[in-house]
Image 1 (cartoon, rainbow, N blue to C red):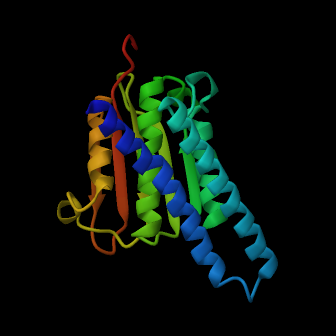
Image 2 (image 1 turned 90 degrees about the vertical axis):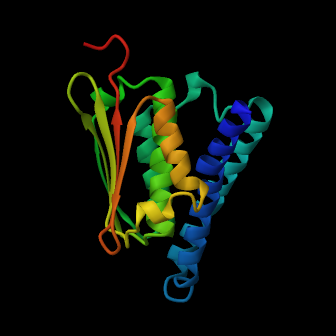
Amino acid sequence: MELRARLARDLHDHVIQSIYAAGLGLEAVRGQLSADPFGAEGRIRHCMTNLNETIRTVRSYISDLEPEPPEKRQRFTDAVRALTATMHELWPVEFTLELDDAVAAQLTNVVEIHALQIVRESLSNALRHGRASRILIRLHAAGAGGATLEVIDNGRGFDPVQRMGTGRGLVNLTTRAREMGATLRIESEEGGGTTVRLHLPPREGAV
């Protein structure tokens, strides 16, 4: 049951969100075809690349239930930069990244995996539901060896209490935070954007 729950979270947070991203890109292309056919063709190519990468991910899940072996996994900051670059090509959104590589280097593999999926889910929510045009992703030290990860958007916002339990997204966020011993806070209000703030514990043995 624990394995099935983890697989369900990973499929939702990685595979389904990647497909949604491609869908967002194609939605944007519709209004671009007549005015900028060359730009539309480029965006379609990015959508195809994104979908092909998703297919490879699904195949790896089928073969060994892991998205990719640890030795081939990207560093957290590189993965976030690649993710936002892809999202920027698919959707007209401005990203600002403030990622401390020294802090990221202290994250364990487990924390990296969960944190990246939390970023992915937060971006998907910001674009699909919030219609955000600007998103800030920040990772910085937070005293006593800990760290804080924030995803801040300027979207339409929502009431987190009312939304909790209406879908898998917010539940997955809180579950992932709990499994890595982190504290998650979601601050949002109608028309006021959303901040997802994750307080990561110190790495075991850190001074």
